[in-house]
Image 1 (cartoon, protein in one colour):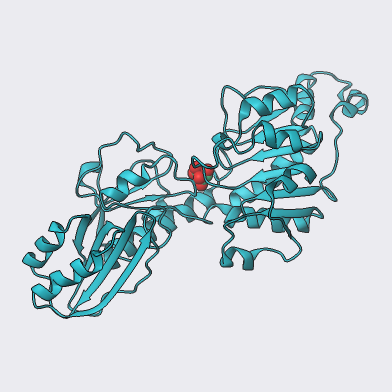
Image 2 (cartoon, protein in one colour; image 1 turned 90 degrees about the vertical axis):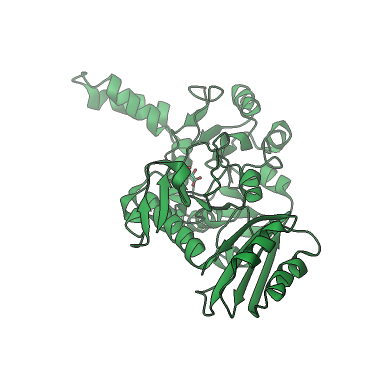
Length: 387
Ligand code: MLT
């Protein structure tokens, strides 16, 4: 029986997917798997028992990926599961930035006791007039699940769309409308788009990527849409540019002291993926990822270990080894089986940056002595007998 701990409330629809092999525990130290949404895990003690963490969401900057990798803990996210929710919010964001809908609604609230409000409206409304999005150019930075959906729907709304993604996968490219103009220089997006939406993970290399230099290239009517993570924008530079009229609006899903309440900033309290459907989809995907890993050793959608998609074990035993990606590991691992006199039916070995994952299917049950020898190999983080 596997134990699962939820660090945040996780949708019941997702938890209902846990089979009878699982039970929920309130104690993180007893858990084989953790399901998490926004809880910050960086200072959390990670028990030796913990095998997997699944983030019910796309971003994973609340999880210490390297620390987990070195303890042999596989971290998953749920790419695409909440993409439609975020996509719909971005369409709303473009409309909110183009027309002063919020200002107009506020005016109605302030004037609700005026018996002549209908007449007053016709005079007041010009203060809230705006522009349409049809015919404008949208630049999408990052064409993963969300970026591609936004690009496609923007085209259907009559926008011209440019996309930039140096890491565009073949899968993502298939999903993208062929009319999206693919650009290889992000500066082209900054200098020619009316709306710029960013969809990249928050990493050292992407932090502050929309800063003074990028803003200096933008048109005075440019609207920046940030539904990925606040740190991707140098928000002080954004607020300064808005104050000087160098860009039109900043719409962000991440309230911070720098942008909240500032002129030109439309700040939403992280609602992009907060829909029933998105929360259910993320939870279901996270649960399935954890189950497939715990029961079969299959790794799909990990953000710290390589992809390794396998079916159920069809031999006597399956052993998973999580280890450093250094020379000689595969020989050392297979030698342990040979020394135990056990034939290997199949080996899968995958690597990703500093870490690697080896799965061996054996014709006989793995012995305790074989497992001890695997654990003794320098560079092995964890050995797990799956069957
Ligand atoms: C995500 O990372 O998927 C979204 O920002 C929503 C969330 O944090 O849950």
